[in-house]
Image (cartoon, rainbow, N blue to C red; front, side, top):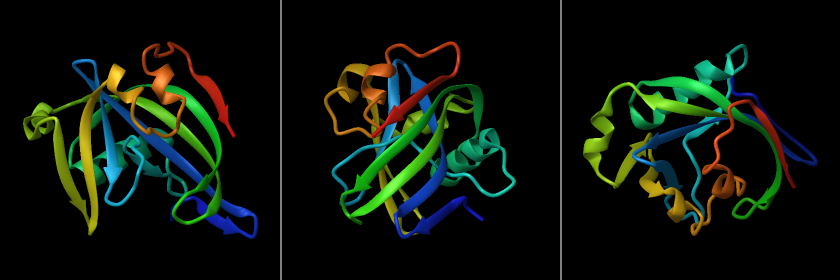
Length: 157
């Protein structure tokens, strides 16, 4: 069971996100019909370690195995989702990941994945390019160029 629940005040999500960096490019994704980009990841399941969750989510979304290098950020994010008009409160662990197999690189700088009927387009974007796109959470635009050696706590409202 995913750790996500709805209240009268909004929705809470407990999430993980994976930062896959190769040749100074970050793998970002965009859902069909959405105006924003984000990094792969998803909700943590009950009784699941966050590190296991990020590996599972990457496997489910991209069909690849990754190695976790380290956790970079814990992000508390408070936002209103544009399409659903729903207030969100998310806690997300951001992990730096390493590709175990570089087979995904053969797909090119842009590729589409159908994840059980959800269409995701993935892009390899340079650190300069991500500063120009509508990327969420917004702190990634600046913080990707200076990855911390120790876990940092970031709050966005």
